Length: 208
Image 1 (cartoon, one colour):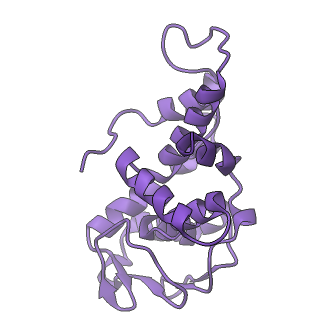
Image 2 (cartoon, rainbow, N blue to C red):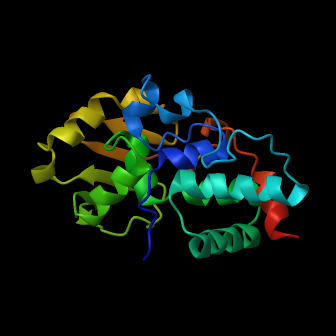
C-alpha cells in the first residue's frame, strides 16, 4: 500500500497545528512548525479564508495524517462507525485509537505512530503471545500487547519506554514497563484524546 514518504513537518504546517509526527523533536526549538507557523509553499503566508467545505476537508485530512491512514481505509472506518450504535464521530475516533500501531504508540513503545507502524511490520510486537504484523489490527478489551523478548534490548524501544509519560497516560491502557507489556482495560475514552479534533466536521464532510 502506498504511504506518504515526504517531509512530515510540512503536514503540521499545512494543518496549522502540531501533529507530533516527529516525536521528541516536536518538543524542542527545532520544531519546524514553531519556526514557520504558516502553510508551506510560496503563498503560505497569504491570508487564507476557508469555505464551509474547506473547513470540513481540512479536519478530515488532519485526523488522517495524525493516525497515518489513507483515504480509502479512512472511509471504511467511517462506514463502520456510521453503522455502529452511538455517536458516529466518537465511534470513528474509537476505531482509530484501537489500531495496533496507535496502541503501541500510546503505550510508549515508539516515539511516533509511524515508528510504531514499523515495529509492528518488523514482527517486534505480539498480541496475547502471538506475533502480529498488521498495523491496522484492532485490539479488544483484555488483549495483552507485548514487545517480543528479543526486541526489548533495541535502544530505540528502551528510550521510548522511558519517555512514555510524555505521550500522555490513558485509563483504557495499562503499561507494565518492566515486562514491556500493555493491557487493554476497556474502550478508548474521548476525553483522553487531547489533540483539538472536531469529529463532527468529519461526519458532516462524509454526510454531505
